Structure formats: C-alpha cells, structure tokens
Image: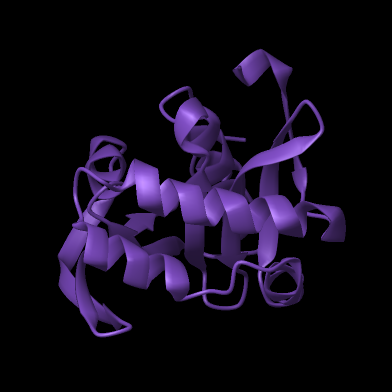
Length: 167
C-alpha cells in the first residue's frame, strides 16, 4: 500500500474523501477503544460534508495520503499553535505505515516552521503508537461530544532542530 501512496497537501477535491475517512476511522477503527454511543457522538462532531472539510482545509494545513486517486488518510496541523489537530486513516489500510508517514511529514513541517515541540490530544487508539515513538504523555483528558465523554491523552514531542542533528 505504502508504495502506491502519494503524500501531498490537501486539495478541495479531497474534502468528500476526508469526510468519509473521518467517519469510518471512528466508527470502525476506534471500535476497540470506544463504545458505539461514543463513536456515534464523535463522528457527528464534524459534518459529513465536503463543504465542512473544505472549510477545515482553509484553517488547518492538511497533508493527505492519496492512493489510486482517493484520499485514504489525512493529518491536519495548526501551524500557529504547533499542534497536530487530527490524524485519520481509512480502517482497511490502517497499520500499513500511512498514518506514521502523515504524522512524520506533519511534524517535519512544524519543525521547519520553527516549532521546538508538537502537541496533540490523542485518542486511545492513537496514543500507544505515539508513546512507542517517543511522545511524552502529559495527562489524561476528557472531551464531550454530543453528550458523550471521550477519553484522550494530552501529549507532546520535543523537536530537535536540524542543527541539533548536525545538519
């Protein structure tokens, strides 16, 4: 899968796919960590429309993973705050390196923009892989979505500049 995937900045044409990736990543991909009511509430937090996701592209720098002409994953970053806003991958292609590559490219962009650390509020699905990659857990958090409470972890990653790496 990774060899057939192109990573690039999001375009308006990606918005419908982003809406579907978001919905399915939550409803299917998060089933092991969150109950059905929680997943339904989480999925309803953002409209399942192209217009909503095009508007988000205007707010957040968004990197997409494109395979066979379709967005199969995306990562939104807040360039001002130095934060990863979202990271979602289509469930059938999860655990194949797409999310890791999206995250890596986004962290690199934040580093290049001068940030010394990156933060994220990670779902219970994402947090274990971030911990394995050296992210620091700052504490547990709960967020309310349509009357349901969802647990997540506040996390950060200290960034080394290229000068620190000897480049």
